[in-house]
Amino acid sequence: MTRKIILLLFLLKGILTTSFAQHQNEAMADYRLPDVMLAKSGIRISSAAGWEKMRRPEILALFEENVQGKTPAKKIPLRFVTISINYDALNGIATRKQVRVYFSKSEKYYMDILMYVPNKRTVPAPLFLGLNFGGNQVVDADTGILISKGWVPYAPQPAYINHLGTEASRGIQRNDWPVEKIVAAGYGLATVYYGDIQPDSVNSVNAGVAPLFYKDGQTRPAADEWGAIGVWAWGLSRALDYMETDKDIDAGKVAVVGHSRLGKAALWAGAQDQRFALVISNNSGEGGAAITRTKYGETIALMNKAFPHWFCDNFKKYNDKEDELPIDFHELVALIAPRPVYIASASQDQWADPVGEYLSAWYATPVYGLYGLKGLDTIVPPDVNHPVGEGAIGYHLRKGEHAMTQYDWDQYIRFANRCLK
Ligand code: GCU
Image 1 (cartoon, rainbow, N blue to C red):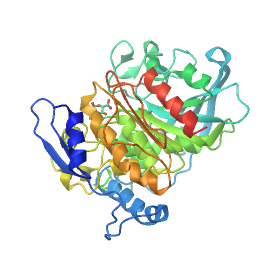
Image 2 (cartoon, helix red, strand yellow; image 1 turned 180 degrees about the vertical axis):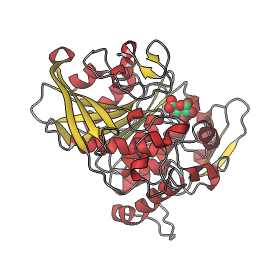
Image 3 (cartoon, rainbow, N blue to C red; image 1 turned 135 degrees about the horizontal axis):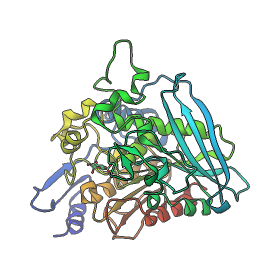
């Protein structure tokens, strides 16, 4: 039986309990999700005020304690230095700026924002903001873009030598970042190399910004303090701090977007920082949009083993114990309400559990309902290349592999045109 038919059967069988066959001889998984509307006190949430005062803070605290870890409350003074401006970028349609954000008085800690702002506009531009994987220079072949200095984990030669970007890395991920398309649609685009904030390696916890927040004598984050996903999400919020100072940008209309592990970071940034007006998860999978109790594709244990530095140490308690986690990832999506959210899967990306990604959007729907907003209409995921969601939640399953493509961006722009502009 296909997973869809099985899902339908279980829709008939009951609410919140569902089950479906696992691919390729994996065992059947039955699961019961934590009820997003039921507060710890036993009170059932029935209003937006109840959600905001009681249930939302509870859920946020549970993610902080058990999954991504706490983001330090301490504010550090930022310094923004504009390094370059080209008013005639992309054949004249955009202004390209590069802004260095210093995190401390020393020159050691900084991230570089590469941004494009449409030249044709009468008001400050709405903006897509996302971290990139290969250094800012991978976004476009323009030789004016600074080559990010950070260590790059997946670093094939000749684009990288000793894990550092070379001239040959310019523009190599331009397909992930269709800058002309985004600018032509009236949006700005800003991106930061994620390794500027913390290198993506188990041994690099102290090579990023985390030590700036240590107490005296502390040498690594405590079990309930942030992992790399939390650090990257923090960096996204600091980029938004900069946007609030840039008159070309409408900081009230910033969409945070990310692919894969950076989609996990985008969701967490959007969940915590309610200034983000729209949140977009591209193939974020386990630890991102996907329900973990499906135990399909990547699991908590597999992810914590391969990437022990991504989440807080407490998350390891749930290796092979998904059902003991006091929350599930539909509640991460719910934390974004009432702001619009878009979740995208890819048909060949079973590792990220497309059905699980869809289900978390579906199970977050009642929270949007508290605000009188429409979420998804049905528990049954749509066919490939049939985007759904006319309300505040959007979803599509793209045909193809784990990637962020032109097709995905077309949907994000369409959704943003309706929900953000
Ligand atoms: C691995 C990992 C995923 C992650 C992905 C990525 O596949 O298991 O959890 O999303 O890398 O970031 O590309």
